[in-house]
Length: 51
Image 1: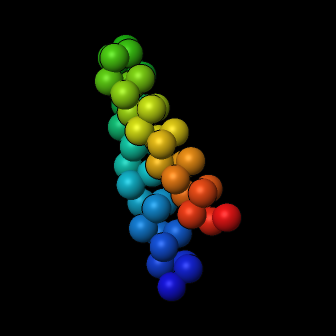
Image 2: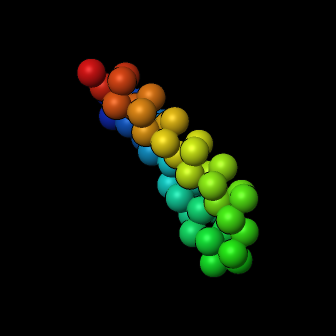
């Protein structure tokens, strides 16, 4: 169950990271910033859930 939860958290995170890299390469800073904020929220949520 715990590993399933990690996979559930990790897969959207990898998608956001991939999108972020693409946006930075395109110099699309507005959407890159939004992707970064979403990533920060997901990571903090994952950390809180793990505690």
